[in-house]
Image (cartoon, rainbow, N blue to C red):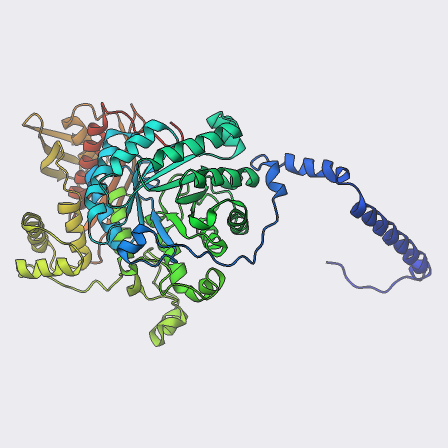
Amino acid sequence: THRRRLATPSEVQSAPKMVSFARVLTSLWASVALAAAFAPSARVAAPRARLNARLPLRMVAEQETTRVDISLPPPEPKATAHDLATGRDPRRVKIFDTTLRDGEQSPGCTMNADEKLTLAKQLARLGVDVIEAGFPIASPGDFEAVKQIAEVVGTGVDPPIICGLARALPKDIELCAEAVKGARFPRIHTFVSASDIHMERRLRKSRSEVLDITSEMVAYAKSFVDDVEFSGEDALRSDPEFLYEVYSRAIEAGATTINVPDTVGYTTPEEFKKLILGLRQNVRGIEDVTISVHGHNDLGLAVSNFLAAVEGGARQMECTINGIGERAGNAALEELVMALHVRQDHYMDKAYRGNAPSSITNIRKEEIAKTSRLVTTLTGMMVQPNKAIVGANAFAHESGIHQDGVLKHRQTYEIMDASSIGLTDNNIVLGKHSGRHAFRTRMQELGYAMDADELSRAFLRFKELADKKKEITNRDLESIVKDELLLNIKDRYQLVHLQVSCGNGQIPTATIQIFDEDKGIETLKASTGTGPVDAVFCAICEAIDGVDDVDLLEYSVNSVTAGIDALGEVTVRLQDKDSGRIFYGRGADTDIVTASAQAYLSAVNRVCDARGTVRPRHPQYD
């Protein structure tokens, strides 16, 4: 904010002296710079050491990376047995879905075996190339879930590869091989720490020991299956030269995919791309394997990092539906797929140099919205309204200018069509006079195949809803299916009767009757609360022994559709004080108090089922 002014006489007289002094300074600075340019590297080592000392998360060796050739041609992968059997283009970017493994590690997102199988079936319909079904050694339940998915989803028509995670330990690998062996295309994914901070502080192994473990355990996994994936954990904070040797050893031992994980979400797109290019130039045998990437969203860069890695030559992306996962989550599958689809012109040039497959991924994009809603239902992790691709506002317009433009031509303010991810208008499809045939036909159109028993149960629920709600939409039907079929778990405690009394000036009171399936008895209890929902929750805790020590962490109500008679979905999260574990419950009804009781009881059943069982192991922390 300096103002222009005229120079004073004294300033004019001193101007030549000032100019001369400036010339001397310039000359002196140039001399220093020239001397530094020809000085030995030791003279600048001290400032560099001080700089590295301020970067505790980084290893010093990372600052001295080998130069990489950014003009490398795109990789030319050979067709795998899975590619040949399913007719998939080997040049595509493979989608490795880890919702059932890494996504489930989010607090409160635990799914049982039946729920995992339901999601795995939908992931297969979505067209993912690999399903990481779980961490078999985590618990007996996780082992059975992976085994069931391998035997059911992994043997279907056009099946995905079924993968299990295993630490670089013999017992882990043996159990993982047993769990996935039922699939047509089984894979073992094993990993070991690769960064100095992980090797020293967590693994307590030297670099040479890690190299030996890599060779030995990859070879051991290869003795069980032909398809082995290897990950160098925390690769983006590792010494690149050491990382090159780790991956070289893994490939020599038989790895068919090498995965480069940004375990803590620390890197940037440019760094990720540079590392992929460096691997392609320095790892022995890398031209014969698939380069995969895995990453977390701690800095909000996961999707950008993956897309940059694809430009560098990565051809597999490990992601989750809705981006769920530990801490800030994983790279979101729907965002990655739609970015590659909408900007196919860009990635054909940057990643393929014009030699791209007709479709960059194998994903059936019209299944994205349905898969997203299913994950929300199964995990209770709600999608924020402004979430890209699948958020409620992703295709909404409120600005008058935007509305006018969209009405005249949708592409004025929309770069993709909502129908491309399976979003359609909620038109009225059925009513209380609709018959069983019309109901079955509509369910088939929505993509739900049901046997006679499942159809009967769903149709009865539909009739009950139709008596309460005049207009039944597609979203209502999906909610019915999720309640009656997808989440049809035989709970020990079941809701028989519920009555609530409340109003202005009255004390909210709930009377509840619960049936105990194990003991074969019914319990009737009444309780008061601060409101009708609180009264119901207190009554449930009084009716069931041992659940008065759970904390309600989250309670949310969402409308499935618009209208005063809309179906309401309630989700709750409870924390068991004894174990610290978090459990999720869901309920749906036109009466939100009834839906709240269903959701709370569902979560309580999960708490009771988990008690007395061993807490599942965590792949990184246990």
